[in-house]
Length: 416
Image 1 (cartoon, rainbow, N blue to C red):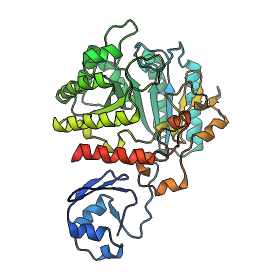
Image 2 (image 1 turned 120 degrees about the horizontal axis):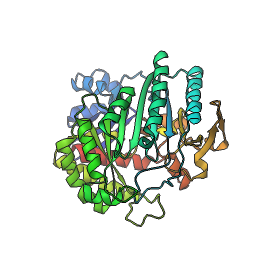
Image 3 (image 1 turned 90 degrees about the vertical axis):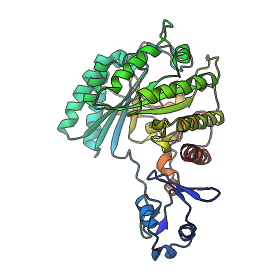
Image 4 (image 1 turned 60 degrees about the horizontal axis):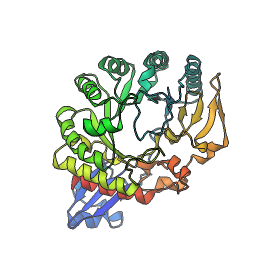
């Protein structure tokens, strides 16, 4: 037996915490005899009778000595297509980076995308197809996307291909009937943003006419939470110091109403919009406050915060997968759904016949090297943590130290 190369170790006063980034296992080991054997030569483990070894092996902390430990990219057999279905929005969030152009995918554009997906399925051995709906606000063009999804769903069923849908929405138009229809078509996860309780939320996330939105979103989510056939709901909060105090009350509220399929996600308000005059946080300040929010949740037994602990703030960017494509309403092919105005973000274009025309920018969007697979954080990074931010800010593509610190701090805040 040998230790997994995907382990992260945290030395505590009287024990060692081991985190395996491949399996997601987190264990505390206090047994001194076991620890001495774990950190000796592999041969010393062969004859060890400690009953905990079998458990550690099951958790992936230790593996067979002759095993060639390889972490496969989970997206390698999945075609992911993210659609900026419209650039219009019914909200005017104070920190938003979008321009609200009067553009949406046309019927001809949907046909081109459908043809592109068919061609991809014919030339590759994909087992899964995932469509991400993005905007603007995607539900402004609800009828258009339903027509497209129904046709695509029917086609993929004939090919026996797994189909899933993700959606990022402000939640204002997500009534129960729309939700049911989307779930029946394959909706697996939805991200809705709520910036704390009504006062702070309505200040930053109001309608174009400046009316508040919190009450409508909450009523939609309450009805969705009662629907037996559901998807995962990610409740995102964009925070600064004002929002954080409101967020704590909101988290208690969520504990009472949204315990089951809901997952909390925290992101600091960042200076993507140059016209935003409010408070923004840098990466260090963001991390510090996320830790405080996690500790608050732990103290108040808000358990749904602890789902997907190893994906908080250091997950691999899904759009940077080689099988991931982002199309805007004009069928420009991009890699990032945030950096719309960054010239290196556009890597090509989709023709009306479903054929891609790729430009040289594609070569910039690869952070992976062969040494990545030997790195202990590869399973959560996959060599592609926010490549767009690295390119735009001219920073190194590898952010190993940041990822390891984040994992250690968040795991300790969650479980110590």
